[in-house]
Image (cartoon, rainbow, N blue to C red; front, side):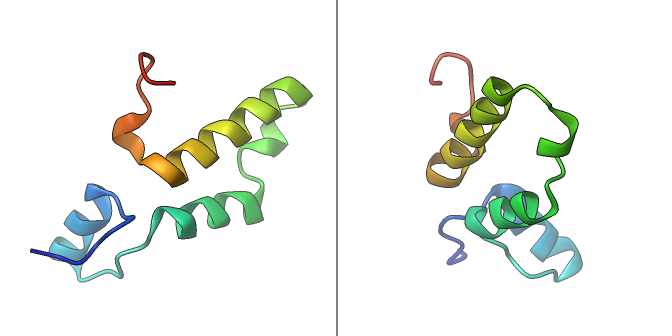
Length: 71
């Protein structure tokens, strides 16, 4: 129905509901990294590395893959 590859269902629903631009997962990850939203809250470098891993995993695989059994 939509050519929204590399986007999440939330972006498609927002587009349908509010005519907002469909963003890719890459755009969302860049937005988070640029604003350091998560990383400023965590001082532990191991935790920061894990958060970076989660962002990369999300970008490559999407949110449906972020379940305990698959990570």
